[in-house]
Image 1 (cartoon, rainbow, N blue to C red):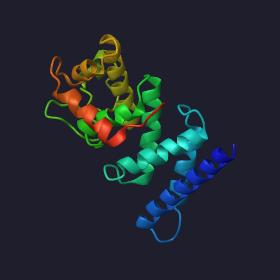
Image 2 (spheres, rainbow, N blue to C red):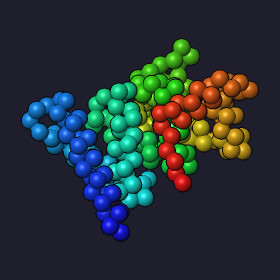
Image 3 (cartoon, helix red, strand yellow):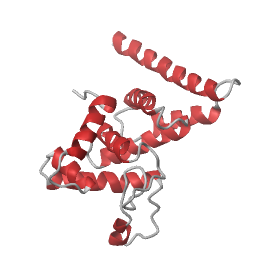
Image 4 (cartoon, helix red, strand yellow):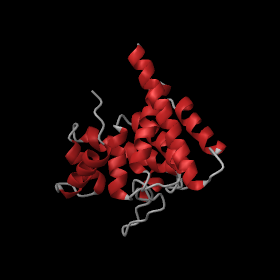
Length: 196
């Protein structure tokens, strides 16, 4: 029990250090109350985490990992909270979804591919028509992640858990291995977390 309390205190200090370092880069007047509230809300209100401690650990860890790709701390924490929720809802590991986004858009929520795919997870607009939801904005983080995680989870189920085949389907490169290899390499190199 004493070790757990020590670890919690350590992680709280790490979170405050992260907040302070981020805010100091933007301002020398102290901690930005908006950022602090955003982080508190992300930790306290997220329903996809087991508890506030788990949320704090994951958000601090992943926030540091994507800081260079998504420099705004408030946007980053908000994004991570939504991503964790949508990945968990789709029964996917959030770190895998981060790897897909890393390859698909490099965390640019306004990315548009040559084929017309949109947003973080590069969703093709035809899906909106198929669903009768033409008003959906694929540049909206929550909407884009809902589409992308649902599509990936569907392909994973269709391929009976074969992640390589599911990723190839997601990318439209069925039967080829180059895309799954890129995603799996990014997952292993940048986002892997041992959940055991």
